[in-house]
Length: 148
Image 1: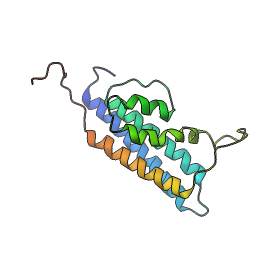
Image 2: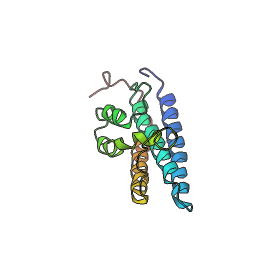
Image 3: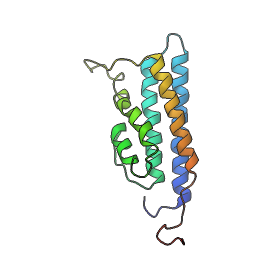
């Protein structure tokens, strides 16, 4: 991603924000129906968090490989965005929500999150999205050539 056009980078970040917003809305729908679909909501929480964390890394032009592990992504983010690290740490246990309820062959699936946990997850997702959105497009100036 190094040397990428800042406009292209920002469009990719905005795309990740858009898809994460769709996942966030799916969470709201799932916890608002009767009976609530907490397992499906948990999956979409993990998906939203993954897209947002990767959005920060795209913004910083950091290659993150092919991982879905929120803990790994959060550790990488801590270097360029230390203020994001606490939110990322709060989401690291959501990694298993990616598969925990989607495959019938998992003998002992994760406990389904409570309504309170899902509400807290929505809050963390909203905060992370706002932080990412507030970064704005990356600068196209090379920091080594900027004037003091």
